[in-house]
Length: 482
Image (tube, rainbow, N blue to C red; front, side):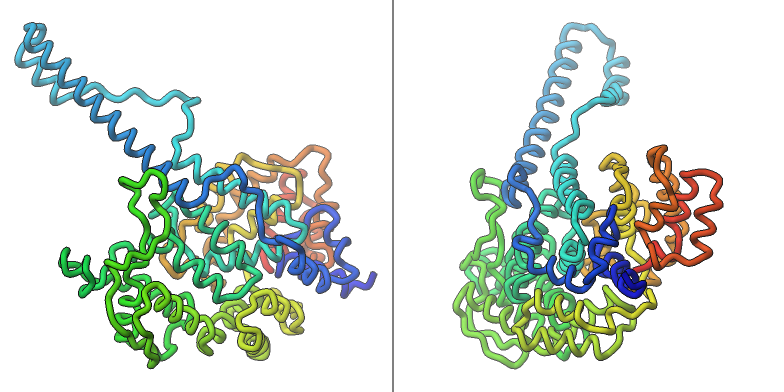
C-alpha cells in the first residue's frame, strides 16, 4: 500500500468523517474516495434506531402535561400549607408573632435525594443525545453523520427554547432529507413545528386575516427573514425589506395546534386559514396568488432553485469541509452540481468527494468541539457517562443543540482557536479512562498514521505515562485538525 493512499485514507476519515476507529484506516486505504462514495449510496445511511423515541408533537405534549401536573402539585401544596396555617391560627397553637415568622420564613425545601429520577425535560434530551452520539461513535467513516450535523447546524433550532422537539426535529426534518433534494429538506424544515415555534411564526398573523382583524394582531418576520438570509439566498443576495415583509405575509397561517386543549394532536403543524394574510404577494419580483398553504410552498420551491441559494450552499459546504477560504474551482463545481441536479444533495456531496481541491494535503480547519470529542471517543472503547460527554462539548463552547443564534455555530476556524487550550482538560479526563493494556503508539497509528509528524511521535513515545501519551495524541495538531 502506497503512503499516498494511506494519507488519503487518513484525510477521508478526519476531513470528511468523524475520525478513525480500530482498523478503519487500513480498511479504506485501497480506495478512500470510493469508501466515502459507498457510504453515501448505502440504504438508509442517515437513519438512526429511534423506534422507542417520541416524535416531535408527542414529546411536546408529554412535556406540556409534565409541566401542567407539576404546576398543579405546587398549587395543591400551597393550598395545603395555607389550610394548615389557618387551622393552627384557629386553634391558637401559635402566637401572632410566630405565625408572621412562619409566613416570612417558610421552611427550606428538602434537597432532592442523590438517586432522584431525572425529570422529563432532561430525560427527553438525554434519550435523543444518546442516539446521536451512538450514531457518531458507531459509524464506519461518519461522512453521512457529518452531513447530518452540517445541515442540522445550517437549519438550527435551540433546546434553550424548545427542548422537547430539538432531537425529534433532527430525526424528522434533517436525517430523511440529508441525501435527498434541498427543496424537500427546506420544506420539511420550515413546516416543522419546532422551526415554526423557534422562529416565532406561531405569533405571526396576517393583519387583514380574520384572526388579525378580530385580535388586532400583525406579522412576525423572523421566520421569513432567516429563510432568506440564512437558509437559502444568503446575505447580500439582492432581496429587500419589502421582500421579507411580503414573504412573512405568505407564511402567516403556518403554525401548530396549541398544546392546551389538544391532548391528541397538540404540537402538530397545521395551516390555519383564519390567520393567513389574504391576497396575492410579490416576492423577489414574482407574483404568488393566494392559494393558502400552497402559496408558501411555491415561494420555498423557487428559493430552493434560486441561483443565489446554489452559490450560498456551495460556499458554505466547501468552507465547512475544506477551508475558511475554499478554492474557487471547488465552490464553482459544487454550485454547478447543485444547479444541474435541482439541488440533489447526494450528488453535491459526491462532487465534493470527487473534487481534487478537497484533498489538498494542507489541513486548514480545526475540528469543532463536537467533532473532536467524537473522534476521541472513536479511537478506543472508552465511553464516559453521557452527561460528561455533553458537559465536555458545552465546556468547549459547543453545547449540543444550543447554538448562540439562528445562524448556528460558526464555521470559521478563528471562532474555535481560542478554546483549544481548554481541550487539554477533556483530553486528560478521557486519558484517565484508558484501559491499562492500551498501547499509545499503536493508537497513534490508528488515529493519525501517515499524518503524524516526527515531533508528535517522539512526544507520545517519551510521555511519562500511558495516560499522558494518549492526552498528547488527542492534543496533537494532526488530531486537532481536519
